[in-house]
Image (tube, rainbow, N blue to C red; front, side, top):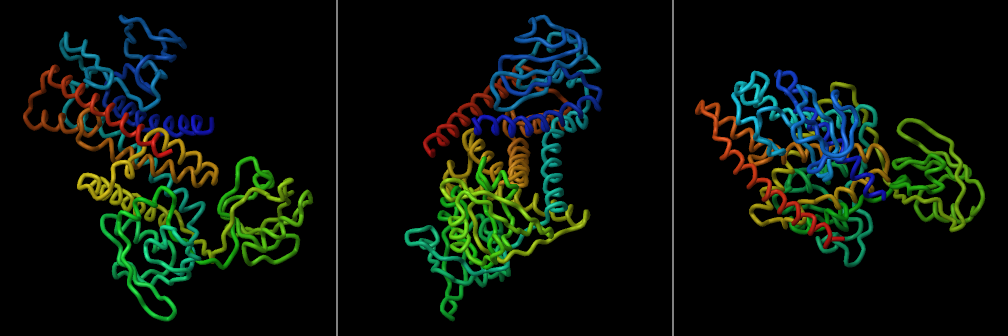
Length: 448
C-alpha cells in the first residue's frame, strides 16, 4: 500500500505541475481548454461548471462551451490538457470538420503554439529549481569531511573496483578531491560517460586504480559502492513507526550523548541502547546548528529503529542568491548526467534496464526517500521532475518535443500538416510509447 500511495502522490504532483503549465499557457494565449486530465483512458469522475461533479464519461455530444472539464482517468501513468483545435493525446479530430475558430490552437501563430507546448517542460524545470533552491536555503548541505573510505567487505563492489579498507582517495581523473561530495560528483556526474581513474594513498604509497563505468552503473541501484571513514556518529535512516520516529529522531541527527555518556563509535551506541531495554533513554543530538534533548524507549528487541554511521560532517548554509545559483548548477549538472546516460544507452555502454525505471521503480524509490524524511522525498521529486522535463522535450511523437518539431516545421514552411498525417504520427508514437512502457515495466518486475 505504501508503494501504491507514494506512487500516486509522486506521479500526481508531477503530472499536475506539467499539465498546469500547458493549461495556464493556453489560457494566457486565449485558447479554449476543453479537458484537464490526470491519467489516460476512461473518465472516472470530474467536474465542470455546466454539469458539476459527475462520475463516468460525459455524453459524446457534450459541449463545454468554453468551460474546462477537470477529470481523473483510469490509467494513472500521465495526463493531458485537451486544447481546442489541437491534435493531442485525446485523438479527437472533430474540429477538422469546421473552419478554424479564433480560440483554437490551430488558429494561433507559431510563437503562441511553441509557448503552450513547452510550458509543461518549463513548469517541471521550475519545480526542480524551486525544490533545489529551498533545500539549499533551508537545509544547506551536509558534507562529509573525509576522502578516506571505510572498511571494505570481501566480495563487495568496492573490492571488485580495487579498493582496500581505509584507502585515501587523492584524485579522480586528475582532479583533486577534498571531501566526500567531491568523490560522489566526480565518479557519478563529471565522469558519467567514462571509466574513472582514481589515485589513492595506501600504506603511505600512492597507487592508481581504474573503476569501470559498468561497475558504477551496476551498483548504482544499491547505492554508492564505497563509504566514507567514520568520525562522528549520526543517524542514516529512521525506520517507519519505530520508537526512534515516535521520539522525533530524524536522519542526519548527530549523537552527542546517550544517558549522559559521550558516544564516539557505532558499537558503543548499540551496546548502550541494548542495555536499556524497556527503559527511557535520554539522548542529546545535534540537528543542523540546534542541540535537542529527546527521549526514546527501546522496544522489546532492544532496538529503537535506526541505522547509523559515523562521519565528520560540515553543514554548509547559503543565502537566497547563493542557494539559487547552486540550484541552477545542480539542475545543469544532473541534466548533463541524464543526457550522458541516454548517450551511453544508445551506444550500448549502459544496459537499458539500468538507466530506465517504470512505475514499480518509481514507487520503490518514492517509499525509500519518504522513509528517510521529507527532504529526501523532495529531492527525489525534484530529480524525477527534471527527468520528466528532459524526456518530454525529446523530439519523439506524442511527447512535447515531437509537437515542438511539427509546429516549428509548420512555421518555417508556413503550411500546416494535414490532420491525417498528424494523426498517423501521433498513433505511431503512442503505440511505440506503450510498447516501451511495457518493456520498462517488465524490467521492473524481473529486477524485483
